[in-house]
Image (cartoon, rainbow, N blue to C red; front, side, top):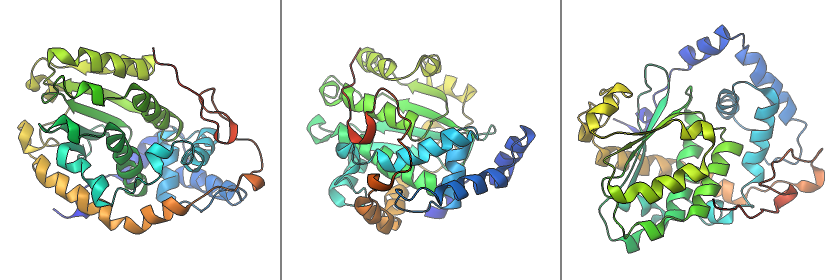
Length: 304
């Protein structure tokens, strides 16, 4: 397998589904492209795949797509711990791959959803930086997905089998809240399900934190599986790595491929570090939520 096969999509089938809903995909891409030409505060013209990625995540709502594309650029200086000095190509940041797996799996499900497998290795908890892990997911993996991927939504599999008490102090609830904010306000993440497997008793604290950070709709899509076989009712074996009885390459092999894939995007990540929006020429205030103040005043998020 090459890095080009890490995100196998089916653009024709996905577009067909939207056209069945009455969406003119090409026309909507053109609408967003023309709108972007008037947004002189934004630092670049996104690629067509970026535009279609946002449109798909936003269910082809033109206004929401505009807001999310704008937020993609605007949010970067607001969350420096996630976006600044966190270039995922640097060796100190790629250390994340030494103690964890964050693996979007190569094949889509039959319903055209992308499955991502998340697991921490059995390592000394002192090696773990939860903030770096979130940054790799939000600033690294998602950047590549936006450039290359297209799906009808996300399925997350979280293997908690290696979780120990030593790991829990490393899991920062505020960082989880900020990650949830990015997923909502930038990626409009369409989560079909979050599947927890190999769940130890001590995971109750983590699950409670997770549920406090997500919407009611997402809470209802969190599934805890008593045995691994139950997962196969939701995700086909041919999609899963061989570590889980599936037919895909091993997690270690996919991990190495993702490290290589990130390196292929080194120029893009260097460019992102220098990109800035120009608020002086913004044509209208950004429509924002009460979680973000206008023009960069990040408000405190209360923890439940």
